[in-house]
Amino acid sequence: MRINNNISSLHTQGALFMNNRAVSNDLEKLSTGLRINRASDDAAGLAVSEGLRTQVRGAQQAKRNALDGISALNIAEGAMNELHGIMQRQRELAIQASTSTYSETERNYMQQEFQALSDEIERIIEETNFNGIQLLTDGATPSARAANMEDIRAWGAAGKTLARENAATAFDAAFTLSADATASQQRDFFALRDAVMNAAAERTVPATGLTAATTLSVLLTDTGIDHGLTLTGATVNSVVGGVVHRVAAPGTQAVAVVAGADVQSKVVADFRATQSDGTAWGTAIPTLRIEDRAVGQFNGEHLWIGANDQRNVDSILIEYGAIDQVNARIDGSNPSNAIDAISAMDQAIEQVSQARADIGALVNRLESTINNLTVSIVNQQAAESQIRDVDFASQASKFTTNQILVQSATSMLSQANASTQGVLALLR
Image (cartoon, rainbow, N blue to C red; front, side, top):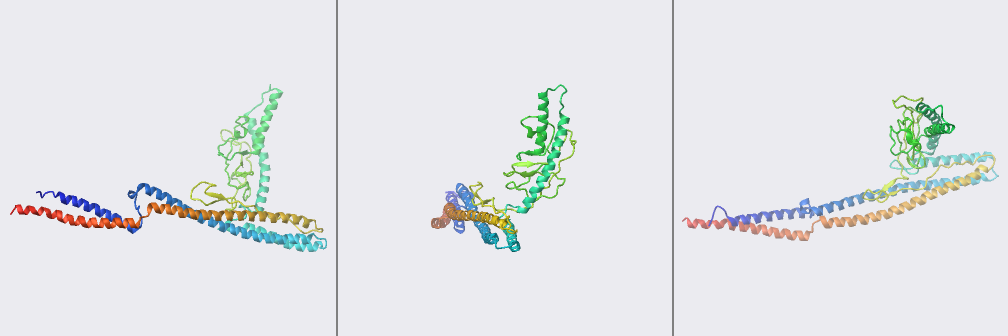
């Protein structure tokens, strides 16, 4: 018999420790309702569960996005409904003014109402918004777009002239025509000089990779000649659909203008001809300062209706027909203006009808998207629950078993501790 080490007691203590830990784990799972409370409970299951939670929360937000999209589209469609009513009245006035029973005076009266309705159409187009985001415009008003393009054309004409002069000056300084040049060589020389001047006047380079240090020789890749001109101060202004936003008066800051049918397809830049040592050649081209004051737009942008980052998979392009301002009159001494206005109103009404049809299709698509997201959320939540949530029936049974084992181990520990008392009989 030994008293220094009670092996039976040590075994019982170990069993009691493990049973107590099992009861503690059972209590944690039953109190939280989760089978996995930490990575040590099930590392692989935790990873899968968190991935499912990510998808569920992403899908829930995507569903809210789709609902917001429907709300915005409903606002846009409601405004278009009013536009339809206004345009129908304008067409009615145009038909009224087309008959020869009215004089110029009466047509002028009709024109007053017709113009007031046109002004209201423009106001509705410019003011209809969702959360400050314009729904019926591309971010720039029709009047602003017209003014912008007029300013750009005037600036471009002046800029081309100075660009050609700067390029010619730089070319003449860089290249000389030898006195014994043949007639053919002379033609080639001046053809190259014209090419440089024309390239500078067009001053267009791909927007991709454009930097302040880009040399004008990129415009002459067919000749491969670096004539020493550099492009300075060029930046790319963000413009959608080739529309340049509000333009202020020409200033000193060199800012690029995006033009063309495609977004950022061309850059009309401020070319300042410089020598290799940095000194200027002649006069700099006048520049336009572009102030992008347009608010955000909804039409033409992506609505995110998925839980991941794949464009055109987790998003859809919101695109419906553009609505232009009505440009027609019904006044005059004869009904010709009014007759032309009938056709113009027919086209305007067709535009609105097409836009409303596009919006209706988008709303129906978003309704289907919401239904799909709802089902997806339920199914993914069920999968996540299967992995992460505790089975109460099974866990309660384990808890009861472990409680009994704790009580049993406690009782056996008492018996093991008492077993060494037999040593006292040997000492009497």
